[in-house]
Figure (tube, rainbow, N blue to C red):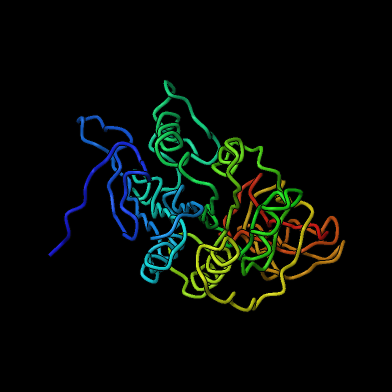
Amino acid sequence: MQETIDTINKLNLSEIPAGTITKFWLTLVHDGLGCPMNIPIIVAKGKNPGKVLGLTAAVHGNELNGILVIQRLFQDINTETLNGTIVGVPVVNIPSLMRKKRRFIDGNDLNHIMPGKPNGTVSEVYVWRFIENVLKEFDFLLDLHTASNGRVNSYYIRADMEDETVKKMALLQNAEIIVHNPPNDKTLRGAAAELGIKALTLEVGNPNTFQKGMIREGLTGINNLLVWLEMIDEEMEEIDNETVLCKRSYWIYTDTGGILTVHPKLTHKVKKGERIATMRSIFGDIIKEYFAPEDGIIIGKSTNPINQTGGRVLHLGILK
């Protein structure tokens, strides 16, 4: 029998009993029929006081790996020995998840309009209410994402590496790559930073799928962070990956259209002048080749061969 789950309008951790795992539906907005749009919330509140760690996933509706990361984390949490509180939001963007779309119902990318507005567009109100009614309860945030449609990602992190606390949080993750990226880009991470919440963006693999290896790596990093925050009394898990640090990164775009093949594999280190992609016409003739503008590492790349002018080729990280 399915358990009964209460519906709330605002997360108030002080009202939740210590030593419990509680599930909620939290109403953010209402649809055109006046029916509530609810997001799922899981709260593990330890017997002992401590910090509040928030975990968010599916800010874009096609980003699924983070959902399973959060689900599996809460399956293993022991609130009898937990210090502090863990809040999991398996899906932030419910309307887009249901439509199997990346963007919100008005066409906006939620992770480009934070912190929204209390009286703005439908997407701006949605994110503003999420921040007001959920995010403000956090001390720390891990925001889990994946690549977009037609692209693949390594397991990498965007973090402000000039903030010593955030830097430590990033290094504890089991990431392949860390990119220094100040949180000033209207993302959820940026909105959190403006509130004094220490935050990371975790890019955990590819869209529209569950990847067991990526999910496992994500759980390793979260476990290590919980140990470092003294929320659990366990050993840190050994890091499998040799993390590559990048001082910046950027996408390379096409300047013509055709059938694109991107040659390097994820995490491959390329040299300046190395061929990275080939564009062919519909007749199979090579019409353009693309070369690395400088030394770097492949963070993500396009996998959809049909690529028009201005399409993405690959995401190049520049090593620190």
